[in-house]
Each structure stands twice: as structure tokens, then as C-alpha cells.
Image 1 (tube, rainbow, N blue to C red):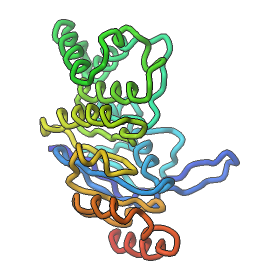
Image 2: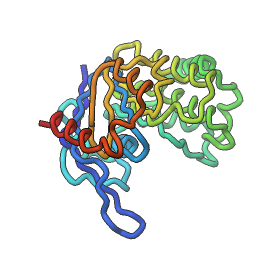
Image 3: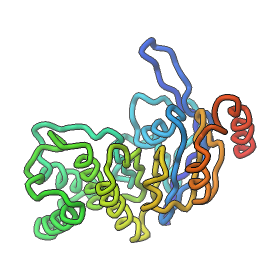
Image 4: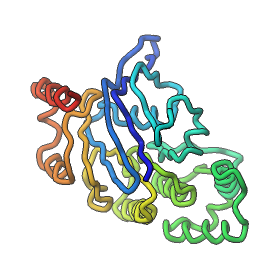
Length: 265
């Protein structure tokens, strides 16, 4: 079993005016392989900041706290070292990579992650099987990465990478955004296939509960103003579906902050 542990993490960014703004204000979270953790919360609560910080995005400044993977200091690792250690980020807005075909990208990335090139015969078979399951047309293999892809196609390609790279921990940053019902089911099935092997922990970031109908969380954490305001089991997601985030915002924000401080203590 592997463990990704986040302790009292404080993170800031520099605004366009070069003003330092704190986003995360003491987040602590432990994820084990075989577990699915859902992070929910209103816009601007720090969910994507957490994902980007784990992945090593240079825009985010870690003021204090730690992130460790099986006891190793993740914050001391370069971005590529984090990937080789077993961290994977499915981006909210996957980028286009002109001039790099899907075939070259996937095999080059797999080689970099494993330290050796995969057997071409087995690799080709695995790629074709994964693309078929994710309903990705075969001709996409010769197209440039994400270039001209629809939003749903880009998200399916993110899960294609997940299934082929087999990370220890998958951070899915609003993978459900922009997906219709059919695409949501296909993407969720891909995540579930990899998760069912019991060798991956999943951190699923979302605004809505609809993806949780297909990817069942073991734990739900509610982010408000850069803190975990409440946490519980799957029933918490059901409660959020009924009540929304109103009790965590506006006039109720003080109570949410008090709850977050109590959880931290």
C-alpha cells in the first residue's frame, strides 16, 4: 500500500499585480491506494490549487506544510520526478500539443515513466484496447495531442493516459466538466477499471455529485475558503446535492471556519 499525505499545507499565488494571495490555509489530507476521495466545494475554494500544487505547477508557492509520498518529500521533487514517483494529474483544461502525435507522446511518456521502452507488440495491443474501451477513434493515434479535439475527447484522452501509465495516485481535476452523460459514463468507467486493480488512490475534484453516481467515493471533503470545512462518507455528497454550499458561504462562513479549525485541531 502507498500513501499520499498532505499536512497543514499553506499555498499562495502571485497576482498579476505581484501581490501575494493565500489560497490554501492549512489543508491536511491522507490518501491510500485503493481509496477514492472526493473534494467538493464552491468556485474559488482552493480545489484546483491543491491539485496543481501536488503536481508541481510553478505558479503556486508553498508557504508551509508538506506533501509526502510513502515518506518521500514530494515538494522537493521536480515535476517529472513526481510523475515517475507515481503521481498523475488529469487536467481541468487539457492543452493542445501541436506537432506531437498521440502515438509518439504516449510511448515517449511511458518510456520516461518506466525507465525503459515498452515492448512494441504488447504496447500497441494495450493502446488499441484502451482506446476502444474509451470510444476513441483509432485515427486519433496519428493526430497531434488534443489538437482539434472536442472537450469530451480531450477528457477521454486524459483517462487513456491514466490507464496506460498506471500511477499510484490519480488527481482528477474536474474531469467531469464539459462532459455529456454518455462521455461521463465512459470516462468514469475508465477510472473505475484502473481503480479496481487496487493499486491506485484517487483524488476526485468536482463541483457536482453527478460523477459520484459512477465513481463511488470512500470519503468526501468539502473545501471552503482554502480549508476543509467538513468531511465524511458518501452520504455527505448526497447532503450537498440537497442543500448545496449555502451553509458554508456568506453568513454561514464563520461557522464553516470554526468547523475547519476544529478538524485541524
